Structure formats: structure tokens, C-alpha cells
Length: 69
Image 1: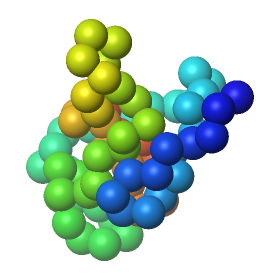
Image 2: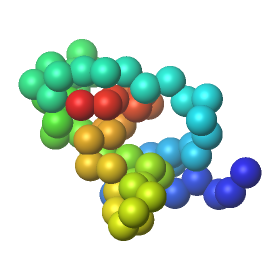
Image 3: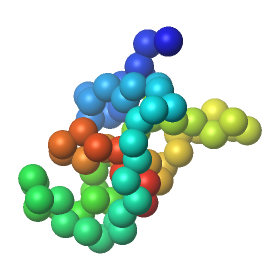
Image 4: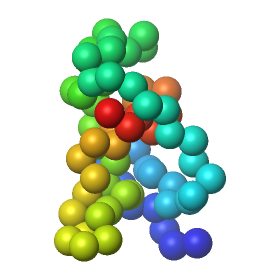
């Protein structure tokens, strides 16, 4: 397994197909910090195959869950 990439938030994202992603609306309020999910940092550990750009719709919640908005 390759080293995990670190998004701007400083949280490490494991590059693992076993990671559970939770589908959520971007306007849902986080129970931990009180901010909307869309305001959380996106996970740069997932990239598109065509361009290599991060998948900007996958965010990391305060509790470490990966959110697919």
C-alpha cells in the first residue's frame, strides 16, 4: 500500500478500497463542530483517473468519516 496523501486539513486519508464512505447532503450540520459538511476539507487521497485532480465532492468529517457529497 502506498503512503496516504495528506489533505490541507492535515488529516491523513488512507488509500484503501475498504474505506466506508457516507453519502450526505452538503448542508447537513456536523455534530462535532457545528459547520456544514461542505465546509469540511476535501480528501485529496482520491483523484480522478483522467486528470489526476482531487475528487472535490469527497470531504473528511471531524470524526474521520469520508463524506460523499
